[in-house]
Image (spheres, rainbow, N blue to C red):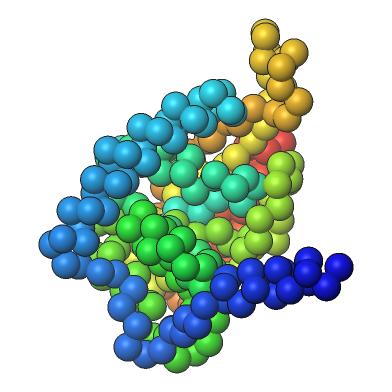
Length: 244
């Protein structure tokens, strides 16, 4: 038992590598060598592997992919958080459209993993106020460059959850302040068919990409408008869930 506890303590110490986000933290690395490595890893390695992997494991189906393909501006995308690989599936739904993924700051405390996920366009959400201003500036810059920035308003992962949980306001406030649309993305589950029904216990996955919801009509009160937009997105996503 003592040896096991020591091993756990060592792992915990290794996992919690010192990582602090301050006002000078660089959220988006723009060096040419970094971008070349990032594009090769994302489009030529991760994308094709994950496309095959998600088809085999989840028989992944994507509905409404054109709603992202036809975007001619930056956007905030939001989805329910129900699978370990759901960020990869969002990336597959986006196709060639450039997307960045917001994630918990704690994910960047894991050695090697933090370098890998940064190459795969992950952005840590600062837990303190020191890095918030720079974080919001970085998001604003990405949106102006016509990228998609993905958020999980539910915040935490709940595997195979079949309902939409309470949304945080952050993503919707950012969308309104930057006057960009919100693209709701809904994960739903279906029973496996054919031979998959025999060999697979867990359900297969469908992604539904809804039409972008514009934010240029929200001009009155930022707090009230944020809640209105949040509730509108939540309603449309719930309607998809109810139909399944």
